[in-house]
Length: 239
Image (cartoon, rainbow, N blue to C red; front, top):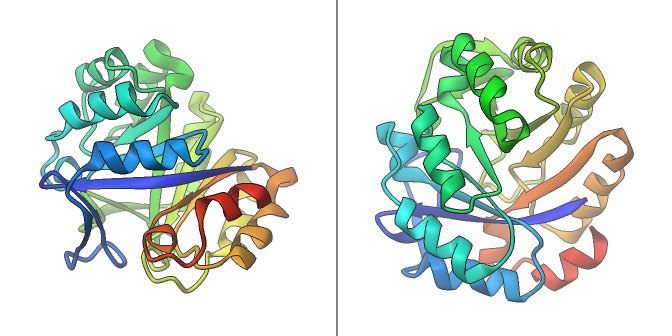
């Protein structure tokens, strides 16, 4: 199970929110330096999100993503405002390992089918859910929201095998991940899942590790690392 440090970028800074609300805390003014730090500590994959892109619908920090790929020297999965095939292609050309699609995936099944045909497993679908419904537009809207299980079934039917799952109510709270929600998703969908949201301790990592055989391939960790709840080195030993 991969331990994946999160690097969320807004206005050129590394930030974290709580449950998607716009009450950010800035942890760094240098996202490239931050990403490189995690890579040097042993991260095998970085989760980079352009929050400006998520809120506006168009990535604003691709230049920083390109620099992170170059300087960190480890695979990077990138999302935030990715709503066109051209953006996916540009990110891949910049060296991103996998491009994450969220809002557009929920809004347009036809788009999902087209990008799967072109990019296959270079695209990773994200489902950010609250009370079982997938949110869109940087978690700010549930207009047209779909049931998480139905959405997972749709992307699996198209051909996708992996998904990033975030429990929005857990994200940034340091109150523990949604273990039962992850279990249900793994059992009902058969998808390989990268989980995000709520990790607060090494015990949480241990609890998630148990789900590896069921298809949990990684866990994204953000605030717990930035707040020093445990070190990346400690977490990597458990992953």
